[in-house]
Structures are given as C-alpha cells and as structure tokens.
Image (tube, rainbow over all chains, first blue to last red; front, side):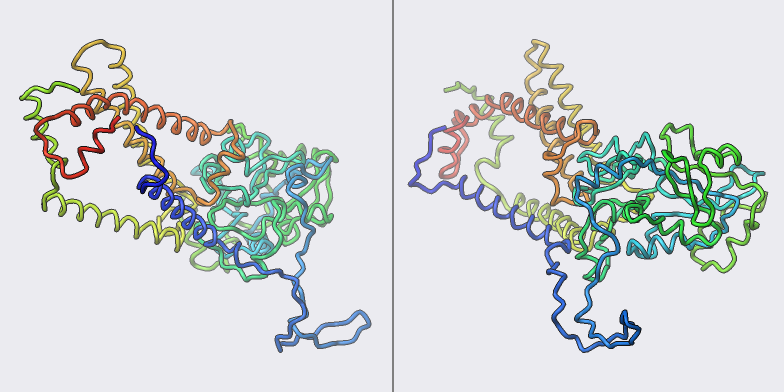
Length: 325
Length: 189
C-alpha cells in the first residue's frame, strides 16, 4: 500500500478517530452508571436542614441538635488495601456452629444484613433445613462462607479480587472484581451472591470509605459474601451473627489460641470438637473449610419450632423437606 | 497481472454481482438485518441501564445463554482452525477453497464468541484489570490469552489464504466496477 499524504483526506484515520471517541464516550457513560461519580465529600457539617434531633450530652442534659451538624461515622476503622490483603497477624479464625441449638430464629441473618446494609433478599448467611436421608431427622443448618483453606473460589479468580489471608479469611476486593462470576460457579457451597442491579442504598452509605474488611457499600456487578467481620475482630468484638443469636449457636475464635466463644461460653476449640463430635460439611470435596459443625444431638428445640412465626414466603423454601418420611 | 480464463470471468460475474452494483433486493435485506441488530442494541441498552437482572440469571444460575453461546462459537472456530491446519499439511490442489472457507469461519466465530462473554461480565469498565492484575492460574486468563492469540493467528492465516482472491478481482476483465472501486482494489494487497 502506498503511504498516505498528510494533506489529503484520510478516511481511515477519521474512522479510527471517531470509533475511539465513541468507545471512550461509552466507557465514560458506563463508568458513571455506577454511583462512584456522585459521591461528594461526606464531611460537610456546616449546613442546617431544619430537622432537629434530641441528644444526651455528656453532662446529662438533653440538647436539640440540627441534623445538618451530624456526620455519619463508620463503625470501624478502614484499613488500607495492602493491610486488608495481609490479614491480622497471628490469628487463624475458626467458627463452630452448634446444630443442636439452632431453631431458625434468623436473628443472625437479620443482624448480618443490618450491619452490612444489605436488602432483605440478599443473604450472606443462609439458614437451610437439612435432611441427610429419608429416615434421618431434619435439622436447621446455618451456612456462612466457610473460608476454606483450599478455596476453589480463589483458584479461579482471574484478577486476584478474592484472596486468602494469613489469618485464614477469604475476602473479596470489590474494587477489583470484574463480575465474571467464576468464583460463584466454583464455590461448592453456593455461598457467594452477586449484585445483579444497582444496590439501593442511601447516599451516606454509598460514600463510605471501602475496604475488603468492611465489605460496605455493595457495588453493582460485583460478587460478595460473608467475611467473618474482620473489622469487628480488629476492634476486639465478635461478628454480629455470633452476638445476635439468642441460643448461642455460633462459636467464633482463634485456632492458634485454641479457643472459641459464643459470647457467653468460652471453650477450647479442640475440646469441643473432640467431645461433641465436630465435623466439617462436605469434607470429601477437599476444600478444607474453617467452619466446624456440632451434630444435632440432644437438641434444645424440636425442628418444627423453626417454622412457627415464619412469613409465608420463607416457609415456601422449606416445604419440600420433610416429615412425610 | 493474472490471466483469467473466460470461464473464470463468468464465475466471477455470477458470484460477485454486489461488486458492481447493489440492487433494491439487497437494500431491503440490509435494512431487515439492521432492524434485528437494532433490536439487539435495545436489549443491550436495557441491560446497561436496568442491570443484569433483565437477563433472568440469579444467584443459583450464574451463567446462562451468554456463556453457552460463547462456548458454541469458540467450538466452531476450533473446527475451522483444525480443518485449515490439517489441510495445510497436505499438498493437494483442492485444499485451497476449503482452507479459505475454514479460515473465514474461524475468524468470524472468534469475533462473535468473546462478544457474548463481554455481555456476561458484570463490570465492563474494569476489563483492563484482566491485563493489569492477571492471575495466570485462572482459567479465565487462559481464555483471554488463548482467544487473543487465536484471533491474531486466524486473521493472519485468512489474509494469506485470500491474497489470490483479491488479485483475481483486481485483474478480472468483465466486472464493471462503479467509480473508485477499481482504484481501491488496485492497491490490494
């Protein structure tokens, strides 16, 4: 092909230019489709809105304060991305779930949703009704992410958005996730959920500083899951599901210190596993989960207690498990 | 300049009428296909603005027709590449048209397949992460590497296989090109 003069009209160059412009415009529109472009600086506390709230001052007086002067402060310190990938040194988090005590109160589910600002349909912690075989007795089965030691989700992520830390947790960096959903296909426990549409959150939540440890706010087109609340662990507190359970079903602790606690009781992890026959769910899959279950023996409640006071659409989920055996 | 026989020119005239002029029938067909493409673009617009909920996929079925179509078209492209590759090893005269067709199939399928995968990705504005933060252990990275290599290779082979065809068009004596067409064909390849 002959080289083109710079003087004469070059249709090929014009075509390439307009295509590049078109792609750039589409990319800009697509990027601004997410809410990232609408976060203003959240620290503007000088305005007056006219609404007043009553607060108790440190001296014991009740004062009226305009809501424009209030600032939403996130509960926990947000660490840098590098620290979030390293993990809390010296810890090896482990959870023990006591199936003998669970009555499907679902306080754990609602507490987790409240803490992470999730809508009702999105459950990072799911309570299933399990029946191991036809004649076996059904039991309630709360299922968190198991933070496996051999995680299939981490193996398949193309951009290293989900990673395994030295304290045993598997977290997701939703600033890097491209939403290919391979991790969801790889997880044998169906524990990951996807943001199929833009989450409807108030602006103060959308503009919160994000770290993989807080997992707030949710972003459209990314994957998320239970994270064992490492931001609470850094503050020395138990995850909200452990605190919210009325029957002490969840024990959370550290395998290095060999201790787990459910808020009321503190036991040695190796003792409780040995004495009460702790096992891991679907051990044969080879994922080495970090959540142990205590079998439903000497139950606190009959399994039917879990179906009382349940809204109809939730009861629908469990209608196939059964008592017809 | 190639010397093209009378019979060859007849074949050209029968099979390349569009090079000479475009009739109403072709315009109607083009408009119809554009309408179907427009329908698809409207669906794409819905998916971008409303979100991936319009696809009907949910947490328990995370991959649907997008992935299925992607695999289907990549399979077609493999078929084209295998046939073309195998025929390159043989030294028979009749392999040339088949190689041409196989390469064309390969390239077109390799262009359509990734298009479907791009529709399935949740965050298209982060596609560059696949290059910046690529994890070689992931099958998706293998996909990206394999298909981009594949596309480049297929295009090269297609070009090599069709050089002679362009020369035949350029040197045919019976086709009446409209103004300008003949000039641009003269500068091929």
